[in-house]
Image (cartoon, rainbow, N blue to C red):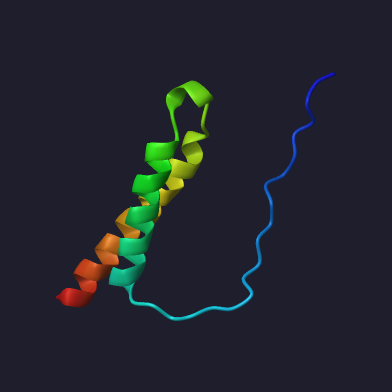
Length: 69
């Protein structure tokens, strides 16, 4: 029997705290580094997750540059 495609888990925040773009960039970059270290091509990992995190990281970096000017 074929595996049935399941939608991704829906997460809801229980609380939130404002942080600076620079701090967010640091957190995303650290997470991305750890995520890439754990993911190996042999496990067939989903590259779309990495691509989306890289886009977020780049956008945060550009925002930090705009804020510093």
